[in-house]
Length: 387
Figure 1 (spheres, rainbow, N blue to C red):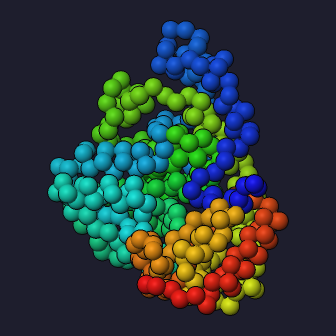
Figure 2: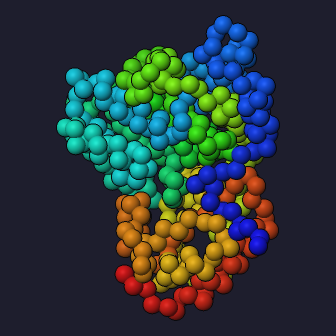
């Protein structure tokens, strides 16, 4: 059987062949532990880690010393949020985040709320953007951290990081962003944007799974946060544990590839995304796009709702396409997506589909996928939808 056409690049990406080639020697010939400072095996491994640290830093406008390696964005989010909360508890008791964040952020803040912190979950508008005036008004002299993701993992909304950073900097509050979906996809300069902490992961930009990083600002201001994994003081005391050298090397190699081709890849993926949307609209009368259009959206993201179509049946019928479906209202499904609820799209009965386009996606795959969805939507459109 032929494999489904892969259009779920938000969930994960394949490792780029060039990244794999960079990683392979660190499984065998260069297998040393970088903490082994007494011999060449350790020195060789440390060189690979140092190179990767510089490559990741260059992608986001940081310095190498501001990069702490982790197992991925979920760990980075936990380290940033819990680490700041632990360090600054004597300076305040209020935290701010956004209703459409990834669960690794939302659940972490909910946990802190159970521990006595006051947490504000900012609403978003119908395109998924926060209101900067509302953010400014929500910050008090007891607020210690604002966390707002760079780009939404469902509807592709790219928040104005620079404007958010200007507000937090003006008010003397730290700013963390979960940039897992954005790093390597949109230009980021953490210092120009007044970002204090930034989470990223390799498997979202053609690197390996199990390798991520946290940017921690070291100047103006220098950020202190409490370690969440004790045992050896690795990564300048922020994250103990033997480093995943092959994964870190892959993380760096993937970052370098993204940095060198960021603009051209954005244009290519944006053209494919627009082609897909045009084909869907030309074949289906009612296609509702969730999230913004244009430059304020991830170029490889398309999230649409087909009103009046049963989401569960759609999912079963397009099994030859690897996509993510999040039905706002479909028979047999669980709760609606918290992102669609936040933007008001959950009130529209129908099937919602997230298409994630990637580096390996072809024009032919887009055409085939669009034709398949159009055919299935027409076949299901007259069937009743159970709320």
